[in-house]
Image (tube, rainbow, N blue to C red; front, side):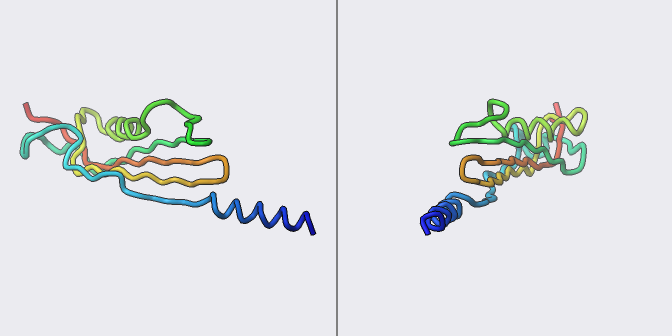
Length: 115
């Protein structure tokens, strides 16, 4: 009976501390300051992703911003791209009892500035 109680408490704790959430972080007109008409679209929409593993809120993967790494990955998909317009950033978290998996996704249309 005691073992069954321990298993029940462990299952209840696991259900309370686990979950999954996806939320948009931001939607912006452009990733760099630019005027309307001051850029040329040079490709179709691109997507960059970054993955992190966290335990107790501390990142176990690369240091720094997952959003910046995902942005650079998206930008590098088109040669000569200097920024993104119609940019969106989404974050997905999967939380387990002692570890979290975080995916950051940046999408946007690559542009080159008109000089």
